[in-house]
Amino acid sequence: MVMKKGTEIKPAAGKLGVLLPGLGAVATTVIAGVEAARRGLARPIGSLTQLGTIRLGKRTENRTPKITEFVPLTPLSDLEFGAWDIFPDDAYEAAEHAGVLSREHLEMVRPFLSTIRPMPGVFEPQWVKKLHGTHVKTGRSKMELAEQLIADIAQFKKDRGLSRCVAVWCGSTEVYQKPAPCHATLADFEAGLARSDENIAPSAIYAYACLKSGIPYANGAPNLSVDFPAMFELAKKAHLPIAGKDFKTGQTWMKTIVAPGLKARCLGLQGWYSTNILGNRDGEVLDDPDSFKTKEMSKLGALEYILQPHLYPDLYKEFHHVVRINYYPPRGDNKEGWDNIDIFGWMGYPMQIKVDFLCRDSILAAPIVLDLALFLDLAQRAGMHGIQEWLSFYFKTPMTAPSLYPEHDLFIQLMKLKNTLRYLRGEELITHLGAEYYD
Image (spheres, rainbow, N blue to C red):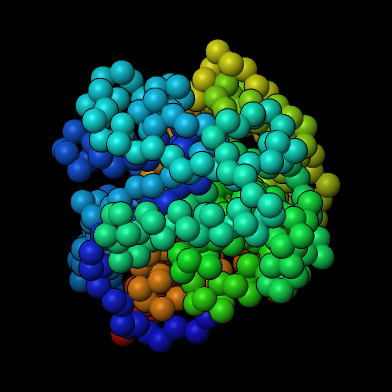
């Protein structure tokens, strides 16, 4: 959409509801971390909205406020959390089962976590074959299930006295699907809901219900969810921002750091082999080949777009790219992403880069969820709607307008994000030209 420079942004008045479809490892880690930060027990490390700064004007001006001081973001003290899940465990029980946080940290926030009980989820086992939900909604049609979600949202807002909400998908990866006829227009989609079209996945029902309720929506999984024409139409009609898809946490994050460096130096790539071992619920879900294909498609795209083989055939034509994910229960949430990168340089001489990233998946994802919730709320208060490409920084497969290719370079993504904030506040965009070019 077209924005005016220095757009008027409505104040962040009142409480903001953060609705999380999926009360698993990621969602409980977000909630626990926010509560710990509110009580001064931990720092929100990894959150751009909480710890990041933004340079304004020339370097000689020395204006570098924190992002929280520059744009009117909702303070952590005004966040209210709600969730849906296909299991009945409250947030404390779910966090204990996930095994991400230490006993010490969980006990610090146990009273708060225990108050968050999930609403029954929308679930169809054919979409996530490795899970067997026991806390699920039933209805005569998928439209009736959507209406139940809409009623949940209305009750949540009423019970918590909320002026506005945002939603961030924190659920599982569904089996791979391409858009079907029911995804073409809003009318087609609503007709599909009414007849319970087999091509409509649970995640898309959540997205529809949230947008129909006036709630901005971000998709943290590689599911289709909100990335098809019917949802674009609904977001435009409801004047709501949407974003996605698939949180950029471990291995793909590293690729979007390393690959731009290779391209910047015009170093060639023969092959990039990536493997992961992961033992949490996400790993169990991805142990199903159909769900893995969805994730694989998300993880494979970044290198092609960053390296642009069609523009650099001597360097990147037909490089080999392999992605593997192996479910390994002993590792739990502590994922290991291992990359072997075969490159070549001057006169074609081969070299190798090896990356062994011993990361904590939900620890990396939690600040992304928080930032997306706060930035989507900011976008709505600024009158922005449709696909929020400036939030590509947070996603493996960034959504874009149909005519555009996605930008995957992490540093270009960050520049776009910060320039969007500058533009909203009427500040000059940063081009990184020398100061002499400004005079």
